[in-house]
Length: 173
Image 1 (cartoon, rainbow, N blue to C red):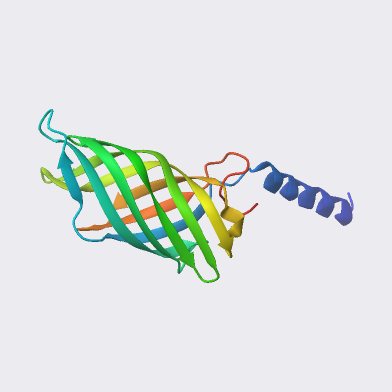
Image 2: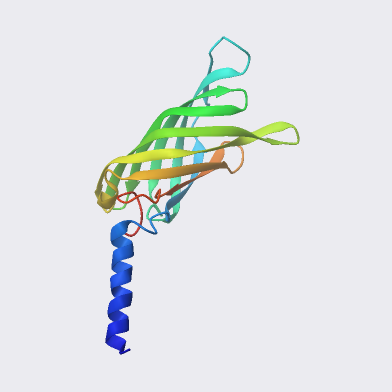
């Protein structure tokens, strides 16, 4: 086989992979976040430990497309003891030359215990980039997956990835 044929096959394969959405499950951004103020915890009243929790947070992008970006967000969830369901959330991403608005569409979480005491929560779910402009414009209207893990008192990491479906968030489109 000649070199030109091999190069053509390789380039065509890479183009097909990008066009079909394969390999979109890469990290869009990893952010380090801090809770702003105190979380609002409203007891539902039907049983002990059943409550609605609202949290505001601020993040800085550490890697990926969101490196250096600032993210201001909030979430509202229902907790029944150590298990949570996320009902609403999202925020605004501000990057050099770009702006985006996110929306949480679903999520679930659980309390992490350390030495018999709550040490934070882990959560994951799906979201949507409802609007994006400038350097983030390619993300507009795209679906994503998110995962949050505790990183110390009042802090957590937030990782946003594409969900592997065609037309979803990813760094290669």
